[in-house]
Length: 139
Image (cartoon, rainbow, N blue to C red):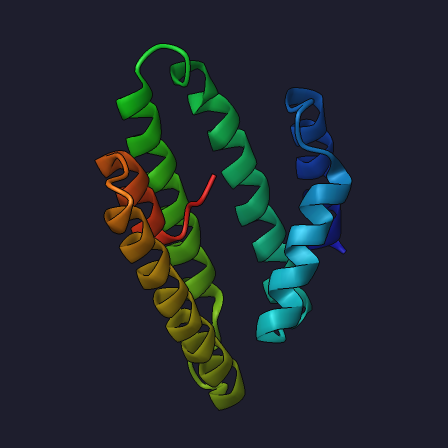
């Protein structure tokens, strides 16, 4: 019960700060990831906190977008990698099915990212776009 209250409070605080991301978008992302890796309720609660933090941090670096684009993109990549790492830490290492799903998903992402990087290189894209594509940031 305490976890649910903490989660609800965190979500409420986040909504007060972030007008650009709806609660629906956050829930959708949490449900998608939780379903993909078959998270239990405890993992879902922690995942919600991670996703909320991700959007808070993205909002914090958004001011750099207009000013120092290179720093903005570096910070955005760091946030992405940090979020991915936090999600990986949530995995139950003793749950073979969960680890198998995670490893399959990572392999799929690496293949997709490699294709995207190659396409960008072939089109002489900006190096920052290539760096983003290497870790799966496409926008």
